[in-house]
Image 1 (tube, rainbow, N blue to C red):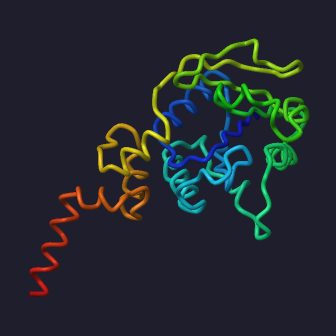
Image 2: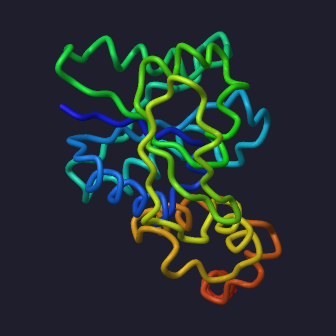
Image 3: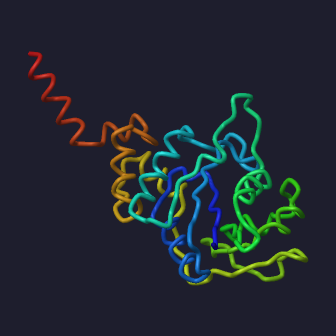
Length: 218
């Protein structure tokens, strides 16, 4: 079996994430991709906006129409609040594989360029094959590959979309049409995620409901 770990904050997961996963599955002949939301990435302290359980549920919703995609709780927050490191996640997955299986790690070119700063990074590159994907504004450079790393370059995807862009549009009440899976978009709306007080005021449907309730009470 060819299995890939796709980690990230997924804050929120969006269509570019799914496009990357589909391309990686096609080009690297992957049987399954584990989407692993990070509770709190060591390299992004304090950066998550939505709580872990919301992000995990959005990943689950995004994966439900793709049989080869699976949401995973491998990096769920522990009761002691300790950090989880990539090498720990890799080993948890590897423990369930056989010597005939191959384990891949799907990663953006920007994050891969910093691999030498990761916890036990030499062990990481020894245990997985990397699938490195283009990131907007970041050129994939083969000179960034550490000695011994096995890398597959995913150059067929270069969609200029990030979770930061999506959050900003949601925060300011702008449309995210075409950016999010429909189920994820509905979940965000139902749970009022990423919204500011200003964006609520701009939502005419929400305002209309409020006016109807006010009339009913009168």
